[in-house]
Image 1 (cartoon, rainbow, N blue to C red):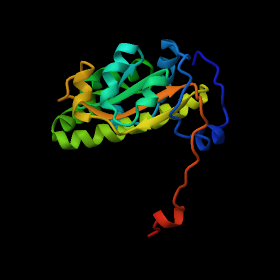
Image 2 (image 1 turned 30 degrees about the horizontal axis):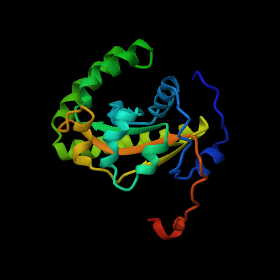
Image 3 (image 1 turned 60 degrees about the horizontal axis):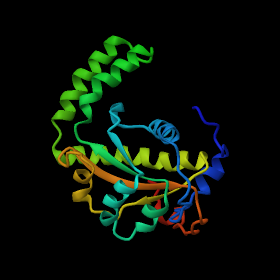
Image 4 (image 1 turned 90 degrees about the vertical axis):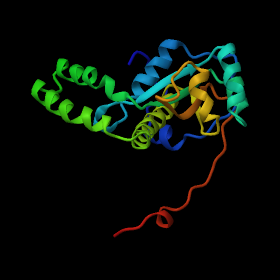
Amino acid sequence: MAKELVKNDFADVTFGRKSVRLYDETYKISHEEILEMIQEATTAPSSVNMQPWRFVVVESEEAKAKLKPLIRFNTKQNDTSSAMVLIFGDLQCYELGEEIYNQAVAEGKMPEEVRDQQLASIIPYYKSFTKAQMNDVVKVDSSLAAMQFMLTARAHGYETNPIGGFEAGALAETFGLDKERYVPVIILSVGKAKESGYTSVRLPAEKITEFK
């Protein structure tokens, strides 16, 4: 972790988070720091560690102009944020399975025989999934990384807004990705807040929980 975190208090980072839609448009987060935040966000868990999340960071005026017609009512975030982080799920994430597990062996986190046993069962299992099944897997896993990115960004001194209102059918191709392989999951705006965000309400735990 190259940058000292601005906020280290768990309660502040987690429970102080709000959706911020207006940012300081003059502030740009460096590529180095965005990559740090993504690296930290991807310590999130994923099914059998297949890490299906893929990131496209939209920051240039040209790229933001391409994104603007695809995000409906969220153009203020696009106009003022340091970046719009598009998170996709890779339906063929298992293609990197061997690389992931080889790295685990190289770092002494997994014996070779365990790697071989797990890959021999996991890869065929993933390949047997229908597109709908894989879609569910990569969306759940990528959502975990998205939430972690929002918290990581707060720890770095930034704010975010999760955006689900976008033209899902056009997002991948607009940014040069194969729409049959890469499923759009969510868009996160990130930047230096120019507003505090709104305090919202949550249903009480007793109303949404059952004990059996």
